[in-house]
Amino acid sequence: MTTPGYAYVCKRPSEEDLDLLWAALLAGIAGYVDAICYLRLGGAFAANMTGNLVEVGLAAAQGQWGDALWCASLLASFLFGVLAARLVLRTQHSARLSLLLEAAIIVAAATGVLGIAAVPVLAASMALQNEAVTHGIVALNVGFITGDLQTLGERLIPAAAPGEPRKRDNRVWLLLTILVFYAAGAAIGALLAGWGEAALILPAALLATAALPPERWTGLAAARH
Image (cartoon, rainbow, N blue to C red; front, side, top):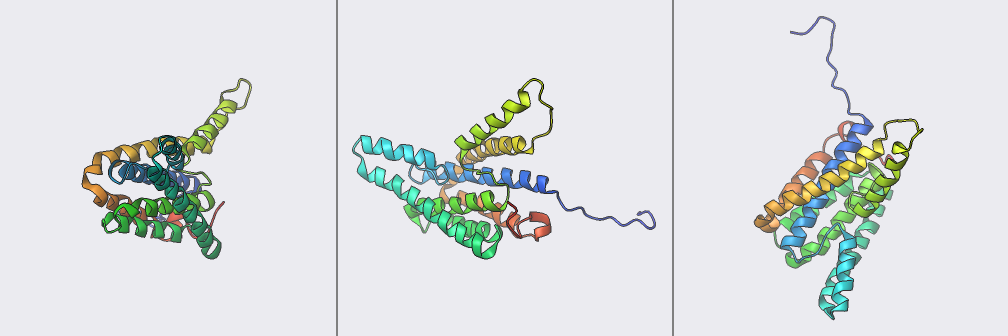
């Protein structure tokens, strides 16, 4: 029973709430996809380019030039994805298309038809995601974990300094969310890695479901940062 004269209005999520939700979702997807790629698709990463660069050096030092070139190709694929994402953001002024393209790419990889080529393709999709996040959503990189840890430390120091006024720093919570959900996504990916490439259907479905609703609920109509 409703009170006469009272109309319930469904409140739009605040920008801070949307930032937190997107950070959690996309960091989780990055960790999940990295786990599947590492455990099931050749021992390399789709989102963690630092790890791939280390593998290039290790393989080269051991004279394993095929492995070195393989990991280097993932760096090139990621760079291509960055360029494609910037073009999309420049022409569409929205992160939505980048995220939907990413979902479509992950679905293609999940079918198994791409074979080992799924990894460089997924690396490009993670670049699409990173650019969408950095320039269209929360202005933080959900795949650059080393940088996120550094930024977190820089923001924690002033908060802990004596004599400094205490105030809520939303960036600290965003960074913590990214770190926790990246690890959680990797853990879930490891648990479901037995499904092989088919396990990639889960992040693709979550991503598409999150990106498709109207801008009122996603904040994806235009770049906000």
